[in-house]
Length: 413
Image 1 (cartoon, rainbow, N blue to C red):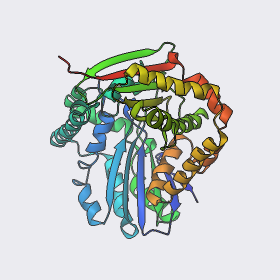
Image 2: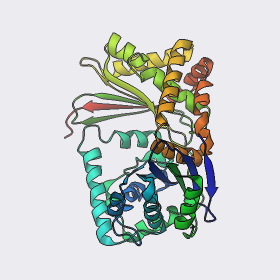
Image 3: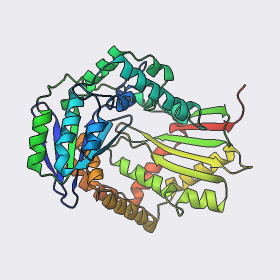
């Protein structure tokens, strides 16, 4: 993959990779702002902006119409670390994409009517996903349990519904001009477009946008957990569920790849350990999964499962601890490890065939290091050894660093 880069005088970073096998171009604009950058009393703003950015910009009242007329499509997503916008468009109409994205980086069309509409959309989403859906508040509960000071303690959608309901136009404007700026963004351009043309269009449309003052991020660091945290809640849900969380490394640590491999060894596929031992053989769980948060700052290694009828949450939890104990005391079979590594490599290769996925990945890797690191990911996973996995499991899967949530079926009076 040929990766080329260019930085504008206003700080905007362009990452480019040409792909002549498609007639399309992808533009991916990553803003270095997520839920972790919010005020604890004003959460959900990054997610709100995911919606507001389509409400109309300084000179373009409707974002979607001109893009659709040019044959393009778009979408966006937000997490605790970043906000990501992307579009695909036929190469002959690509300038429309640069025009649209630059105008909303310049400024949005801030007005009370548009804000009220999008606040209503986000509040309805909060109600549907977190209040009116079984297990909908799990993310709120587990994050608040695991993090005492770091802003990962609330999910992207926000800590409370009232934070969005009470958001004012001035607060929204302030949030935009503090974070949505060329010197806080990366644009990745891939597909049927030359580097020279990508540079020219980026300079033409984004170059005139002035830098903004971006405050240096000073997030409180989560202290090391030294005692187990336990919580039990009663909810009107179909069955009891178990949630076990362990603190893990940040995204740039070599341990990150080992944690990811451990999660796959435990639950990726029907032959994985939790599936084979606790679902199929012992029938302790009807379903169980292990996964990592993948966040930039130290994240969580998460295990969640629903015990079978007649199995208590205490029995289910002990069965998981038994499996984790094996990881701490016995070396993983080389064949088992190789299978997981092969799965990652094939997924990585196929995931980067599509020009749109390449754009998203290039922007992400440029943010956390440099775009070229995308091509080192397979080697990073390949370098993990069985002794590294055993040692890491011994350090990470200790009761003192665990957060346990019993989510029980029961009517709350």
